Image (cartoon, rainbow, N blue to C red; front, side, top):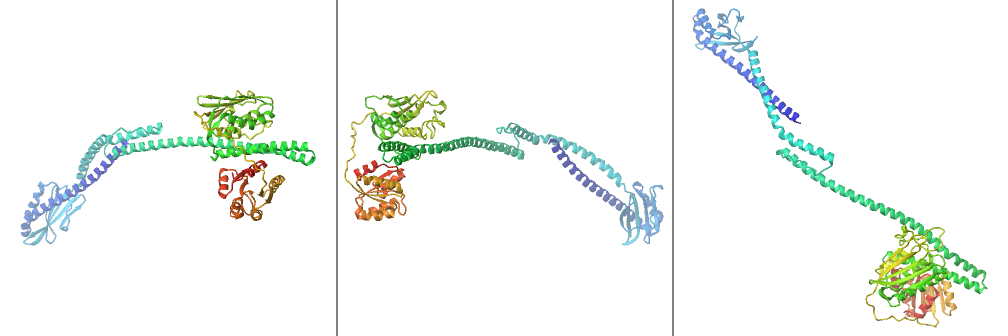
Length: 617
């Protein structure tokens, strides 16, 4: 860059000097020529003035003497005087050698350059009349003049170029030093990717502006690089999260497939003995003992199916935030008794020994008795299910620091350490092999954990490994002070009266079966299979109770209920929704339509009898 700057300065200076030299040469040559013209014209005018009388008196000798005065001007090589008619009157030559050939006739007035000589013709005037012409020829050394002057200018040019090179060498540092600093910083930034570097060199003018702009550019690039790095880190984090979510989705999808397969298996398991029981009752219609055994089998399997469906519904309600629990004072002993009532038959059927270690003094919780009993029964049921026949199950309860510690311990198959954290996830089972002898969907522990968390507690599993048994520990907050009010059990009202009952359901087998049972108890039953038929029958039959399906053809259960309530004869009819829809919103929608009760299928004859006994209560 230094070389280019110096070369630029020298080139500029050289061009300027050449132009100046040419101009000066041109000016000098013009001045030189004009000087010679003026000088010779003056000499010719003097000769003409003093030679006019000689021509008038025809005195060639005087005319030659006048021309002889030109000897003092050695540059004038020759001279001549011509008469008015153009004849040579007198002549002069500086030396005979230099004597040029004189023209026979004088030329036009003025000057001319001929063969390296300048020739001047000037008129001789006497009394206003031209009487002759003065001719002068001088040596015109233009080339000598040009050469000498060119040498002078060339010397000046060389000196000027040397001076310009020296000045440019000194001045270019003010430009190149800051630019070199910018170049060094740019190179370091490129090599080290360090955008905190700055050009420390200071300069004024455009170079200073360039340095400031370069530093600002580095600062902006640094900010953008930091932002890009931050965005990359965020993107990497999001990619990690997304990959984790993708793995979780794949795992959830795999578990879903396993769950669906398990669900199909677990639902078919109780269906098989139910179908067998039906076959037994059909084939051995007259064998009462066989019929009782078949009925017992079918009831047990139906309870198992209902348990599976109820667990699924409870988990769904919890996951959607629609499960609510009652918060009231609960006695631990009542929870344990309810849980044992649910699980003791299964434990006894497996031949297990149950060891209870529950304090005799009352301990109180704030929660829902039914849901807490469900948690405890799930744990007891799991312990019995995953323990070989004749095992030992221990239920322990103790108060520690304002917390109730409930533990269910067994000596069953145990839990692998890798599964201890996952055992409470949906559809995870300790034994998932094809050879497993236990049944279930893998939702019981997940449901138990969610119910415990709704009560402000926690649950954890402890196991030494496979075949070492397992312990499930539930921690729940105890009530510091218990209310003195003790709830008295409320007995269900007994009602032996017979009623007029309307049944409306498009499931023919279900409604005919329930209708047959109610008729066998002495009730009057009207069965319908669509909404319009039920509305027409109700006007004539005037039922005291109407058990209606919601998904009826032609007229759904909600609209049918509203239509029935508008009939004067049915103002006191008890409306009961019997449906497979069991969410809280379904119950609320049923009550808004005018129903007094809401039953979720499957329903038993005992539920019907309870409503018939209680009426609208």
